[in-house]
Amino acid sequence: MKKYQMIIFFAIALSIYSLVNIYLFYKGYQAIPVLQNNKLVYAISFFVLAGLFIFAKILESKHSSVITDAFNIIGGFWLAFMLYGFLFFLLSDIILLIIRIPGIVKGDSIVIFRKWSFIIIISISALLIIGGFINAIIPFTREYNLTINKSAGQVKTLRIVAVSDIHLGSIIRKRSLKKMSGIIKDLKPDLVLLLGDIVDGEIGPVMRGDLLQYFSYPDCTDGLYAITGNHEFIGGAARTIPYIESKGIRILKDEMVTLQGGIQLIGRIDRDSYRFYRKERLSLGELMKQADTTKPVILLDHQPFHLDETAKYGIDLQLSGHTHNGQMWPLNYVTSMIYELSTGYLKKRNTNFIVSSGYGLWGPRVRSASRSEVLLINLTFAGK
Image (tube, rainbow, N blue to C red):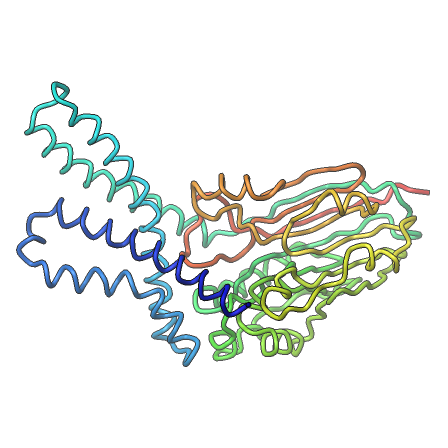
């Protein structure tokens, strides 16, 4: 059943991918006369570029190299152009249908419209991609100050730094990891949390350069903990998780640890463990049987689904990632429809929810709907 579902998913995804590229191919062919005289060269060049990202992923799974890294980067930028090119050309075609209504404009005006719409679309798409790239490589710190009305003994405050969705691999490499480590060090946390998707997928590009050796964090009162994300399972959890743990990163797999002051930290296995391995994670109810809800409880769950369930169990804070807040406009509107909280902060009953848009990214190194971020969460415990 799993194999059958995956085949259907990839067939649909590849069909959409192909149709969008065919559409873009003909828009370029119609708009640029010189291409019509060099159709074969244009077709080969276009479809090599269009297929580069898929080819890179297939090649990467067999043998990771600097070449596959380069193909991933170039192919990623093409994915960004696919999104913006398709949306803007589609809008242009709708306008063209309207102005073709007899009596609105003359024939010469349609030719001029096609020419200038092509120029404008390419220019706007390029600006969005370039701006999104610049935005993606300049991370910032998003700070939250929260009060929890429970006692943590002698611990009155807790300074947490949390990072989600690093997506270490062909695109996010040691330079980004060193920058992130520097940010964490400067924030002087008591506790460091990694909220899943530490790696991008295939572990080959990470192990090739042993990239996690470049991750460092300062001595913390409460140390470092992590959880799995869906991408830890996409690339093969049997290799990915042991590699992460070999670097001294404690991954909580449906486990609870108690920190100073009786603060309880619960880390859930990602919900996609079932999709990839048919392994059910423990229910939140089962995990909460271990907890003392008179003391602070912090939950780490990569994908922010079923927030009402978390609030029902008296959890004080849930930290999640996964959404990237869509990463590229206008996909942020899609994630806002899928998730009750796509990014930022929400409070339900007495539970605080924070969803990060992530530090790294998937596919294009472009962020036009969100920013690369590191979370700083200052907790104050006000209970007696």
